[in-house]
Length: 403
Figure 1 (spheres, rainbow, N blue to C red):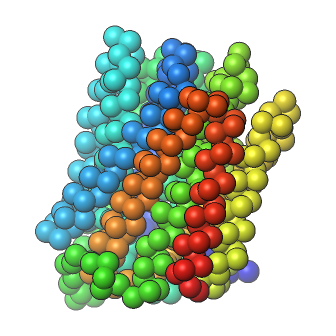
Figure 2 (figure 1 turned 60 degrees about the horizontal axis):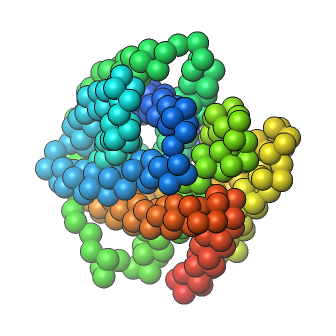
């Protein structure tokens, strides 16, 4: 079977710059995951309200809107490697926020690092899309989809996984120091990646095209659908993701951290495994099937709807979350592939930026709705009340967009 994993391994064998790029971003993803463990564990130890926990999730996404605007604009003037390297260096500097927050019991400082990391992730996304589009051939784009999925899932799989295992053995400041080294080594690897990438263009006598702005009214129906896939995923997934810490808090008030962090780990395992099992030759077919997309998103919701009933059985609860994100990240992979496949190289950065910003706006609105609802009726009830209209909205939008 020609899975995305096979496509990725083949591309990694052929492109040294892709191997270096993957290592660089996996390293920084470990750092981001450690930051997430530090922030959420400290917030849970401070027994903050469900609204604060949901706000932390919102701040981990919303600033990415501005970051993607900056990243997209920089890609029109500078190499995308300049953008991603700068983002890693700034991510290192931002670690001063949680260090300050832990030392002086400062809640705004703990939340500020979430905003900073979201902003830098927004900068990276259009630049990373442009790198893939410039460096890979059309038949290698499934490999880019697989690697992009791995990069973002590694944040929780490796970073949170490592954090969960060592959080009780080291101080939070020590975790931040480890985090800092991951950013340093990532920036160094990106510099080497840029060097090999430039050599490729020189050897092939190819000059990369500048990124150009893309306007919605100029997009074809297929291109518009490609841009909408990630925002639709956010409409269904955001309330659940935002409510996860509050759900753990309500389900097990006395063992909140013991439940929340393993759930984060199960989440990322599903995020990694789901897309890699897709057949790389059927990505277009899956991305254009409304029935499949709604089925994947419904499976995601079903896993979380069962969570309160399964919470007394750890393995069952973790399994439900794993299957949920197995399904949701298939949609994520299909969305990223559509962006890479249906836009030209000059349009790629702008298209991904538009999708990223739309995803963030949807996530922001749904997070606020989830937070307000959870304060009134509790996190478990809010899970059902907010999620069901989300999946209904997805069905309506997909039906109107056509196949």
